[in-house]
Image 1 (tube, rainbow, N blue to C red):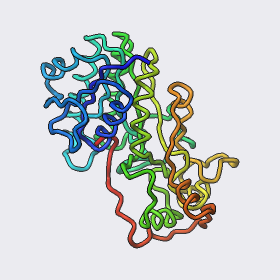
Image 2 (image 1 turned 30 degrees about the horizontal axis):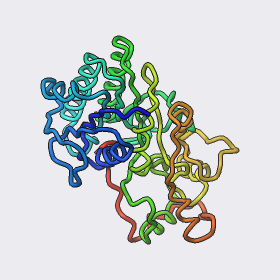
Image 3 (image 1 turned 90 degrees about the horizontal axis):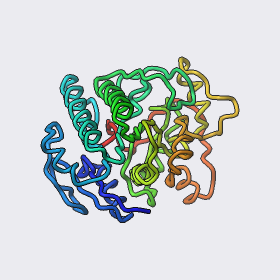
Image 4 (image 1 turned 90 degrees about the vertical axis):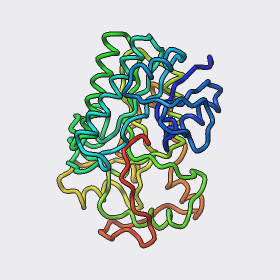
Length: 315
């Protein structure tokens, strides 16, 4: 496989750093565009204000592809107008520059908050399970900025022939995927009541492999993809938890596997050859030699379980 010259915007962030590490490991030549150097520098660093086309283009002229993660990563720490205006400014600059330079591939990092059941506030999904065809119904300025940038991606793909993959991520965690600590066990065993964000999550290393897969298997046009762990964050059957605690939600099919994540990732597997490696329930099975056997109830999270950090998709 030909090694690529790749720009990673936001490559000093939580997920961006993992993406840089994975691409470097695979032999690609990477440049990190950010406003701070990475804690663990693995690639050439260029200080860059992504709202400035002249700064972005100087770097993009030297690369063949872009993994774009460098936007405000959620709705909670900035005003709505700042989130929307900053993200759409950055997204349009990055994608238009890539299109004008006729780069081979752009990966745009979006979010499941475009659908409504993720983020804050939340609404019921229109259908379960959730595929990429679900209506886009963002409930905050962050999700709306991602919808606007997805539409811009479709525009430049259609007008300029740019190849774009849109990644709609659930919450992404950068834990050590090979470890299974006591607090994770307590947290997992407490997951029997109301379901947050349909129980969908992704480990950062699996997210990083998704970028590599999309770069190494480019497709024409613009396509959106889901990426999530194979099974939901749940210790009781996910269909029953949703039925009992979310009466306004549509039901999962009656034959839905007990723990399977309701965020469908079949398209990523078919188009990109991506499958998730890490799954918390598998780590539980490996450590304790038994299946999760929680009963659906309304218990609060176990003491000692970490508070969930409100995160978007990228940093």
